[in-house]
Image (tube, rainbow, N blue to C red):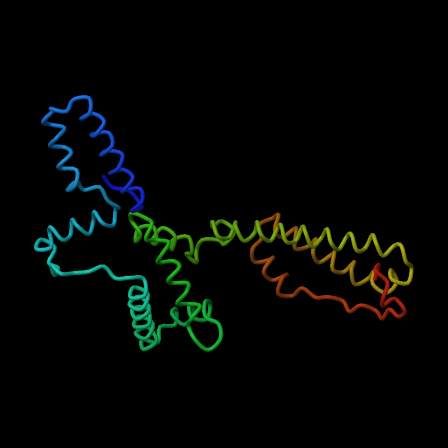
Length: 241
């Protein structure tokens, strides 16, 4: 029997022991029950990790591993993993691969590769939960092929959905501001044109999102401009301002 925690394994053993004892009270001369009670002490009732460890120890000679192997603790695993990632990064830096440098530029920030290393570790931990991690990685990498339009990819649809929510929120804020400034002529005179320009730009962005025009949206975002607000004096403490 295998389970996920030591506490659950101990509870399983206790429940079986209690059941055998109860049956023996009803039938104290049952040889089979007596034998089961003795064998219970050696029964393999453990966590999945303990079971696998015992399986390897029993078959080490078939696996070409040392019989005195041990399981790394978390700190040792972290150090080895970091060493492995650092070694791979050093090898790719030495190769001078252009695609690798693009990867570094996309995921690194500052003067080191800490963010890139963190991204690799996060991905590694995630794919370990898949029965066929390499196949999963190949399938996901295929979603980033250059010939596939961004708006037709899973990640592109996710980005457009986020953009739609963000733009809708910004439009609502801007429209609300334009409505509020109607309460004070001086504020409206100073701010209306700039806010109206913002709203027009946001509505254009919204159109690009609705049309799933990835390139148009990207261009419009990069070139979005804000008109300068006209000076407004005497309203520093006014909550409406």
